Amino acid sequence: MEENESMRQGLLAVREKARANQNQISIGEILTCFSHMELGEEQIHQIYRYLEEQQIVLEDYELHDTRSVSVGEPPLTGEEKAYFQMYLEDLQEVTPCEAGEEAILVQHLLSGDESAQNRLIEGNLHRVLELARKHAGRGVLIGDLVQEGNMTLVTAIEEYRNAGVRLTGEPLAAFLDKKVEEAMGALIREQRGYDRAAERTAEDANRLLALVKELEEELGRAATLAELAERMHLPQDYVEEVMRISYHAMENGDRRDS
Image (tube, rainbow, N blue to C red; front, side, top):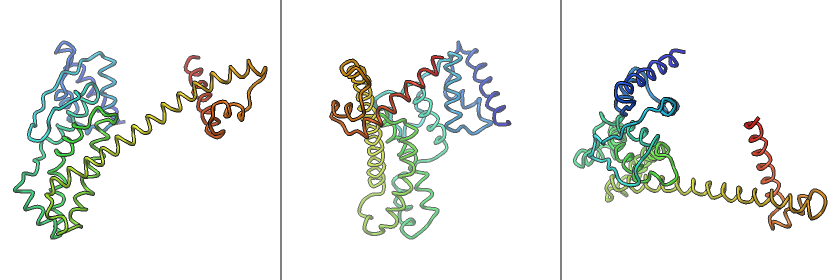
């Protein structure tokens, strides 16, 4: 209940600031309105929905930390822009690891110093955000890319530490770039695979619905599953699954229309 009230107060503050600026607001102003609470993914979605409902324009932002985060292409729009700027705000107080500091930390890391490992993780969060920004617009939300990159960052530093002298010839920065890039690339390929599978299923569903009507007119009765599968040149179990998905989608559509 307390969290809901804090959220309500924050949204009211957003509305007031926007009204004072021709119904426009910046990311920084939004964060000021919610300085009394920690914003998670659900809260960010709620804020963005509120901006749309109130027709509040989200002003373009400028990167305030250019040490490691570049703009690049494609441009971010809408909710992705909001996420990106909020990640930047979160990292504003975090100092990236410079080459000299990193070299010293790596020596401590290889000797088992846990505090060195923690500092290396913290100091390379900017690197993850930079790589996520580079891969934005390729089918995966930037928030998911950052999450994947942060998890990979931790495991990659542990891998580097455990490998010991076998990896000391490869700079840690290059090693982390490679591991995080690989993880983000795999996530994008996985998402594209899901998207392609969904597209194929949708195409087969359309074919199936047309064929059901065609065979009913041709045979004077409802076609059997075996007849449909034979005509579509597809396995029966797959056709049965496509049919189930199609009818389920139609039922949901009917419920929404009623």
